[in-house]
Length: 193
Image (cartoon, rainbow, N blue to C red):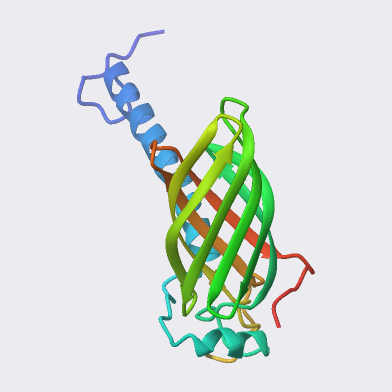
């Protein structure tokens, strides 16, 4: 049998260099896909584009069962802390204030308490707090939002495929450059209205 010699520009011939480039592109694509999916999930959890700066009357309206994701739902939340500090705790929303308290442990194993008392404007809050461990105390800046449940129907009157209950989302950074996130949900298991 005669061996067929293919030219280097033959489209059916895969040169080792081309193969390495394709693998590199595939890896880059998969990395971007995972990153995009993660950002999309965070986008959905944070309420999307609906930032909804409204008056603080929105807190009272949401507590009465009204409002969309642009209002904070008053009540008590169970919170999870992750990042440079990990732990669980409780947050309360009401009367224009957000109070967050959690028992945390840092990456070196020092345990302590995270505390923040913040003013809420519409559903957004930002301010100062402290983390006190058995290794000392450190100040932090915390910023986040408290949202009511997603509505069961969208603006077109169709059921929303994804519904998320009331939630608190926040990020914090300490004065010694450690950071973390806080996520909370109502402690009564409240679901979308």
